[in-house]
Every structure is written in C-alpha cells, then in structure tokens.
Length: 486
Image 1: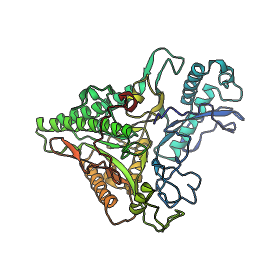
Image 2: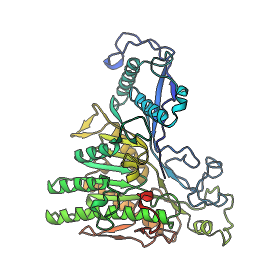
Image 3: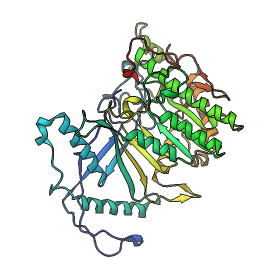
Image 4: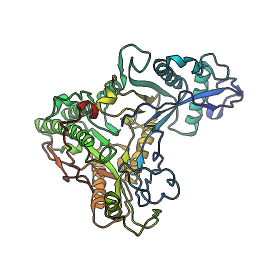
C-alpha cells in the first residue's frame, strides 16, 4: 500500500458570514469585527484517504448486514471474495479537516508538488494569493478565532489550536531542496516528551532494524518503535506509570500467505520482539515486579456476525468447493477489521493524523510522499493536571468504538487498571472470534496474536492467522528486494 498523500488544498466551502455586531457576545466573549460577506474559506483534508471502493464504513463495521444497502455498490475484500456470499472487508480509518491559516500550508504543499510533477501545466493552478473571492490570511485567522471562541462557549473542550503540517518528501516530488522527513521527527519529539501514555493506530508497524534481535542488517532504520520502547524504559527506571497502546491490522491488506505480506509481517515481528525485550530487560534490571504488557500492548480488531440480518444474496447455499476462500469464510463468518488509520495521540494533548505509515517507506523522506497534521490545543481544560480537551474526547471515543464501553478506567490510560481492563476484554473477544460457536461480537478489540513472557520474549499465540496458513511471525523473502516491503 503506497499510501501517497491525499489532500484537498483547492477544496473550498462557502462562508456566508455577515458583519458581526460590536456588542459583547454571549458569555462575555470578545467579538471579531470582520466584514467577509460573500467570501469563501479554504478547507483542507489530510488522512488515510483512498479514493476507491470499500473505504466507507461506520463504527459497527458490518460484514454481511449492509451488502444490499450501504455497500451494495461499494463492496471490497482484499481476498477478492465474491459479494454473492461475502463478507465485505470492514474498514477503519481516520481523517482530519483543517480550517484557518493551516489550510494554506496544505495548498502550498499541493502547489510545490504540482510545479515539480507538471511544470508545463503551472497555469492550471488556481491562484489563492490576492484572490478576491477568498478570505485573506488576516480575515481567515479572524474567522477561525471567532469560530473557536464560539465552540469554546458551547463546549468546555473547545478553543483554538496550534497546528503544523509535517511531511515526508524530496526534491523529486516537490520544488524543495534535499529531503524532508519532518513526520519522523514529529513522532520522535512527541514520544520523547510523553509523560503518561501513547496511543497509536497504524496500517503498518516496523522500524528500528538496527536494534532488532534478528535480521538487523536490513535498512528499516526509522526510530519510532525504538523510541516508544525507550520511553517506556525511562518511566520504568523513574518508577512512574506509563502505557503505550498500538492498534494495527491483523495482517496487511491482501492474502497473508503471499510473499510480500509475509515479509512485512516478519519485519513487524522483529520490531515487536525488540521492543518487548528492551522492556523485559529493564524490568529485570530495575527489579520491578511487573509484566511487559503492563506497559506495552499491540491490538488488532475483528468482527463476527451470525446469519440473522445478513444481506448476502446467497445465505443458505454454501459456495462450491472450487471457491475455496468463499467456502472457508462462509462457515466461520468472521474477519479482521482492516486498520488503515495513521494516528498518534500523546498524553491526550498532542495528536497527529495523516497518510504516513510506521515503516521506512513513509518515514524516510526520500521514498513515499506523505503529509500529516500535528496539533495540540492552546489551552485545553484539565482535571488533576490531566488534559481533558478535544484530543482526550477523541481518544475516549476511539476506546469506546473498539471496546463498546465508556468507563472510568479509560480516563487515564497509563493506569494499570485501564491496561488490564482493555486486555481482559480483548482476550474474551479473541476467544469469541476463534470459537467454533458463531456469535455476534459486541466489541472489536482483540490482542494481536502473540504471547509475551515476563522476560520480554515473544512467541505466537497461534501458529497461523485465522482461516489461513499464513505464519504469524512472517517469513523473509529470498526473491523480493527488502526495499519493497520495508
């Protein structure tokens, strides 16, 4: 999955703003006296935006119960399953809408790319600077401030933001000098500053090969996995609580027995082993009576449905034997939910959303071209020194989606009580997912199928991924160049 950036720098939205009164606004908030009637605002979007079939979904992530309605003409399955039997591949993703001056940075990125890739068509660019149909930067800033104040008046979590665009890009993709890998730098900076917890959702998770226990001669040098483990070890040495949650797909999109996916799984396996061994060693050295999974956990998400409510055209007639994959899934009625999001949250304060995966292709800067937004609120509300603003609310909503519960333990993810509650629910879901008895799964979170012992050694929970003969630990390829899978 190349996951090239998808951006909407030229998307615009009407802002039919009328002249505001100079009198004080409700709740005593100051007003912005700006006349922008009839002008338009620039709105931009970043995230895991794939403009193709099967990407629209809801937090319920149906398998069969929307095949004749929402997904009647929007069916997709990475195994090339027929919609006659299903299931569809459920899809989880996250995007961000950007307003205010930051949207113009997305335009600048778009223009740099356009000028490099299509220099003979520069005249086709829609001019923004000095365009009388659009708000000026000053007007845009004033309107954004006003909207933030209105939101703050309506919701305690509202308020203004500090936002930055970060990229992976080089001079072959845009009119810049050299290589920019500010996405990786932003990840590292936020991880090193984290005081309580880290939460990740990502399509891939591999890196720091220079620290792997095996295969450490491959070029997957981004520091994100190492920095997460190192930050956890710092907190163990300081005798302070800390937890990192990583949600990834059960396996990359496609059929997991193929050579490319098996190699990607191998690099992911190596990254996990390295991280848990670092944590296990630190717990032993510091004589801390705790388990590595009290600090670091990997999860996947899954779905299972009984036949009630199914909209599959062929509900009772099993596929022919030659339709092996359809036949296999027809009888088990389960599937992993594909995690396509690229998200990091640190301490419920800092958030990154964009197109960048945690692998070398997205982090290096001179390979895949990526764009992310990195943001935090300027003055979020706090309770007991903990952030309780919009980032906190968004992280809580993700916990609620994956666990189907909203409980007090989720308020502070670094607490071991939260870690244990999530892990216990994930374990029950895994047992339900794997059971011979088919029942509706009420929540999605499951442990990634590995086992970690007290020393930080990792083994497989099952040898093969469910309904496949694909090894969980993956396998390096002797024919594929590493650069294709890192």
